[in-house]
Length: 450
Image 1 (cartoon, rainbow, N blue to C red):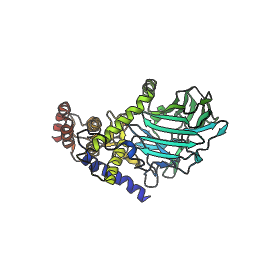
Image 2: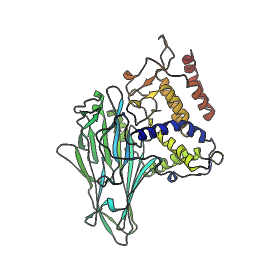
Image 3: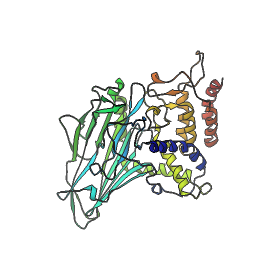
């Protein structure tokens, strides 16, 4: 346990110094590809309804990106029951006093394939599970059938999953394809069990998970939260009588000729309220799947290209690995606007129960860490604290409060943190030459100084 906690702390601590020292503003030919950095962070997980260990730290790492508030892990390679599924989702729910992680499922969408009338046993199909920067993938190959599953974040609320099938044989093959899963109806924290009473509904293109029942230990507004899965093929879904499990199947048997490929897409989304749900349904409707994967690849390749140039490459793969591992850590802790949080920012850690908020000097140091590869996030990480700068008329006018959470009522206004704000604003200007950002921040910095 201590070793796992130490690994998380080391990863967070190295994020700032190694990222900052590795970058150049000069773009160069790609010296590394995303595929050069497999499994830098151990993402294998065996998720249960107990999200935190004794020390209030998750035993497992989670992949999040683009500011998402839900994430996924990979199944254990020996977990034959969950191969073909991604572990989770793990969701950052609004607790009564802070955001906490809850595992909604051990694996919400488990793939089942019947090939020519016989089930495909993924355990014996050469499983390969990999976490690359910006995506998690699984691949299988058996008896002339290749399966490749890839998950990215298309928006700050939606994961996009592509399941690809390829016929490597010389004969036609018939595929009957389905997905199934179950959800936990409670969570355990500090040896106490809390009922959250979720239920699964058929939404005609997949499922919705609703939380409007008894939610012990969670805030009242979590009853407006929703997790939902949408498929983009004709499907039929059956939900169990207790509303805790489901099965979604393609309506048609798929026939693949030799060398033919088939791509099936689905989205998995988590939103906080009805307004977010309506907006995200519009985003999903307009989503171009191929473009989303292409844009994700370009974004992460851009991160690497800004990191590794001929001028600064260290000629040490071990050093370069830690630099990329730091980027992956920072982007997992990236959170988009939600609730009373008006701008995106970076939490100290998604793995530790008490760290799902934004702290003043943490935010500014984290902004420095992402500045060279994601400068707009760096700017917003500064703004998100100044959104709650103490206003004129108060005896502490101009002060920056210690921490803000999803709910401003839980913010700590008692104290502040060391004043590193001018330092990060100046560094942002040095990197971006954005004079408008200086104009925006200068009067706020003066008020803070005073």
